[in-house]
Image 1 (cartoon, rainbow, N blue to C red):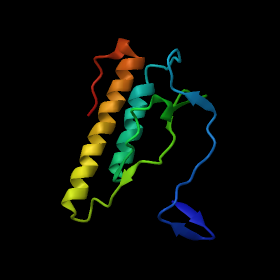
Image 2 (tube, rainbow, N blue to C red):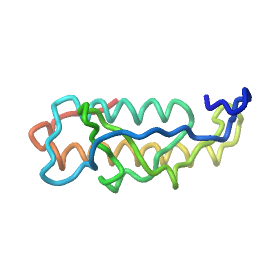
Image 3 (cartoon, rainbow, N blue to C red):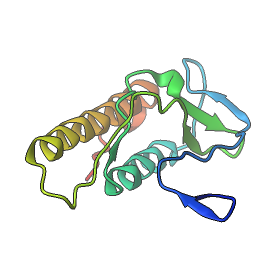
Length: 120
């Protein structure tokens, strides 16, 4: 949680500088990069969020440590899935499915040698 003056801010985003460069053509990533990216997205989904902007490979940062990081949360979607709001829940699931699709598509594009990889 983000804490300001001792108060938890529920609608705030904490950010920090991550040294690295955007995922791009010609950039090599190790065998674990895309499984780690899939796990990162899965963790976000578990908190009732959809990233929505993974069709832009530039929004995935390759850190100097080789790990994936997401930037630009401007169009992400979040909802409280515990509350019964069928339309919002349906939209969240649709957008999360699109996130998963784009992770797989990026994986195929940047690591075609691992094209048989599947995600749960």
